[in-house]
Figure 1 (cartoon, rainbow, N blue to C red):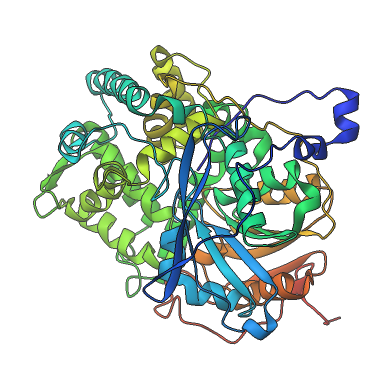
Figure 2 (cartoon, rainbow, N blue to C red):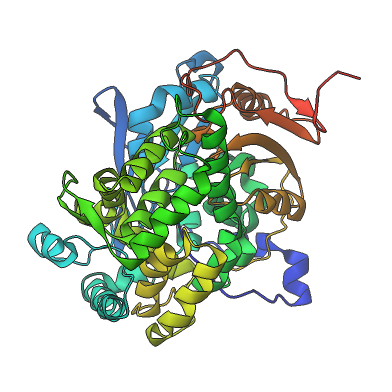
Length: 526
């Protein structure tokens, strides 16, 4: 994801001119537009595009953006390019490489599907905090969430050292990796592919890129889908303030997971069949707060701590409900005294930092600090972790330590951050998709964003997990394709059900597209 700014207070003249004043001031690209020099890479086309580090100095230092695309499968019906950003950050190139066929189908085969790794991340010029893999690996080791006073103090010092390392190796990039900079990059790429207006699919953190672009360049938007929406007003108020807002639903989502597990029964959910599920999990977590338990077959081996258990919950709840049976089995195994499965699952967060030099963990910190800086001192860690943990026991401590703490010591501030306004009117409506039981981006934020934008339509996904893609809905896919290809928007109040419920053994298998419901009823019924 990205990060935050303070609230922008515009003068009356700026309010009248709106974001088009910003767009009009956008500098020219560093040279004449010549298109993109695509090269074959397996069955796709890849390229490296040079852009200015600082868009206010287009003739200055250049950085590189990694770009990839599969050409439209129906070239005779081609509309243009569909730019996609799945959040991550920096995951667009890998997303297109892994799921290009599905994305092509979402656009009806009528778009070149273009992914690009945003500046600071992935295969583009990325944030560097270590000179080599050995130093990076040695620094992180098993970097788990601290749960004791001593471990917390040690962790704060370590995040301060991390911030200093990033500043030494990537100081100039840190000042120019905000989402406003990325919006300029995206507009340049749009011009390079020859599209008069942008067609865009933004998921999770990608919705902040989309909203930033739409408000900076509203007249340059053809179509935009925002799925799993970040509220930019809260997002730009600072890391702590944003998470206080964003995490208010996460514990209810976890309670929903426990309730659905109990309803599914022991045949489908390993936690069920021992009495009420929620008290069993509460007892497990309470015990872990007192002392870790063995994790003899974890990878790597060790013990399961309370912090590890929280990390495993965050990883599982942030993904697809298809993984919920595995989470339930891991919790049940831990309740029986073996924390191996939960400990292994928790390593996914550590791996986000320690797997490779281009892993998403460090860019996620850099982008958060660029857009949503911590306005508190690192010495304020107790009050921050206490506040966020009161908002969400499951996510609060994890995000305090993995995002807020490094930002509290971050060595740079963005030279350009877009902080609003967020109510631009585009020629065509923006399609906003919100999942009712999304633990990461509350449904209320999708509803609020759709109302705030000058021209937007809300499509409600009656589903679980983070974003509609993680809880498949043929109805959502059909509506998205109609919108991208024909600019047709769902009727106001449309609700799309998921194809299957969590703990369904056939979860993820496609169904024929159900009719959308309008106002809670099937469209066309009395």
